[in-house]
Amino acid sequence: MRRSSARAAELAPAPSTDDPILQFRNLSMDYTGRSGRVTRALDGIDASVGRDEFVTLLGPSGCGKSTLMKIAASVVRATGGEVLFEGRPLAKPTSRIGMVFQQPILMPWRSVLDNVLFPIEMMGRSPRKHAEQARELLELVGLKGFESAMPSELSGGMQQRVAICRALIYDPVLLMMDEPFAALDAMTREDLGIELLRIWSERRKTVLFVTHSIQEGILLADRVLVMTARPGRIAASIPITLPRPRGMDMVSTDEYGRYAQQIRSIIAGAGH
Ligand SMILES: Nc1ncnc2c1ncn2[C@@H]1O[C@H](COP(=O)(O)OP(=O)(O)OP(=O)(O)O)[C@@H](O)[C@H]1O
Ligand SMILES: [Mg+2]
Image: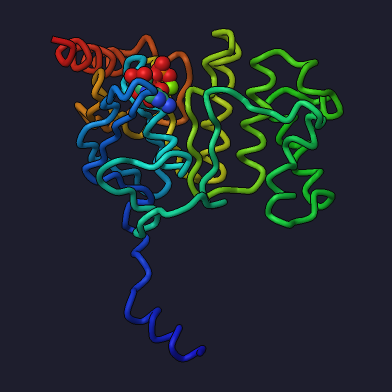
């Protein structure tokens, strides 16, 4: 038994660490509405996310960003093409991928701390052993003192921060975030963006981050994937070589301005 599995491992070599963590190959998605009308949300998506890379996915409302994230999280199944995760076809949800959705989706009957610890329970690990780590994450996102509060006592932005902690607690290889800061005020949003970069540089996680803010898309990214309006396609993949660590002061630099201009013209061009 052991021999045959060792043999199988020989025959199917482990993907090289140079391989992208996530790959979309000719991916398409058609939604069939109740009336039977078919909406093509994604069309021929070819894109990849490399190990330790921070990729932002930027595009107008309705272009299929959430759809793409849901496919990668195995929440919905694509109608065409394939997704490879760590070199293998992605078949089912995995704890190696952490997901922060556009809505926080917390359990209203559990405290903030217990919501953060929920994935640990689901994985059959001891929540008590991870409680300290959960408290540290909550402190990191400015929620110290709210550990025993219930979600209904928090603002929308605070709830979203709890959802971010919940995705970080089990240390996923790939962190996918779908407009996690959309419900936050501009100031908190900038602070959390910078904070996220700090976490990312410390822990070297691979991140795929959806936004429709050009500024957020550029400041966070190693590479920006620009999507066009429905049906969603990848119009450009733009490496961002602004120095790190990054801060809001970069927004006034010429280099930043050139990136913003380039992205705006791609989006505007694609609209015609
Ligand atoms: N469950 C669904 N059934 C039918 N159509 C859907 C469904 N979910 C999304 N769509 C359609 O697919 C398209 C893409 O939706 P999606 O939510 O992926 O866009 P998005 O880029 O995330 O937009 P936003 O920036 O507003 O969040 C839209 O036209 C939407 O109407
Ligand atoms: Mg969306």
